[in-house]
Amino acid sequence: MNYDLIYDQLIFKAKLRELYFPLSGYVEKHHIIPKCIDPKISNLNKYPQNKAILTAREHYVAHQLLIKMNRYKNHKFHFKLVLSVQLMAQESKITKIGIRNNRLYEWIRILAANNQSKRMKGKKCGPHSAARCLNISAAKKGKTSPFKGKTMEEIVGVERATELSRENSKRNSGENHPKFGKQDKDSTKKLKSDQKLGRKHPHYDHTIHRWIHISGVEELLTQNDQKIKHNLGVGPSRLVNNYLKNYKGWQVKKISIKELFIENKTRIF
Image 1: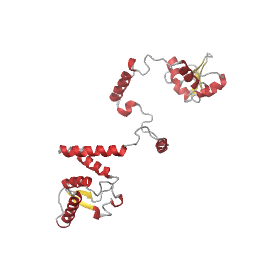
Image 2: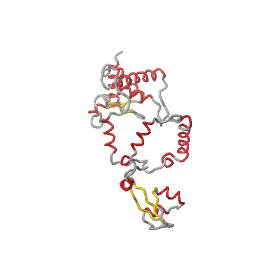
Image 3: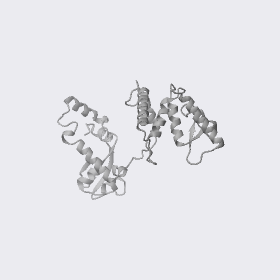
Image 4: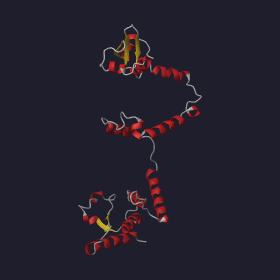
């Protein structure tokens, strides 16, 4: 069957009808030469000669013909023509209407799957390449994540957050834990230990606090640990932020682990 001729006759009929007997009611605009084939003339306002006004049924048939035509059968973007019909065949979220011709749907789905298989043959489907990772990183640089500073409850809601927490706990508890019944080798333990020695410690430049009591007691604790240990409520926070100079006999001095390491010249943690 000459699908090229059938397509040309359909377009000629539509052009002729548009001149003498324009359609009323629901119509659809169709690119005579598909956008994927020649994107330069895809703007129908600039290039009205590439536009045909079709009924929904004619439009659907036209796209099926485009797939079968010899004119575009070996074109490098033939898969896009198949994809367009596949998308037209899917059920609409708004109208809840999809195609009801099972054989036609099967034909489109199989053809789309075969095209996808041919396109991806020999290509690696896995982690991003180093160049692509750098591009992604550069694109996100300087942009603040919309989830920054938000708790899981704020992002997905309290109920969903609780459900996710339970699922994660169940998935990694007891025998389900990936390290259940396993112990690190001595060499691994030593490696982990050396990785946190002195300047290599992840909190080497982080700030902790030296808590000094009027009785002469000194403690090196984080703000939260100090609050819990001595039941001080909001006191440590007010001391750290310089709202108070003394709270229940305690004073605070900020100190980084780097300074502590230099001061003691010993292993931290």
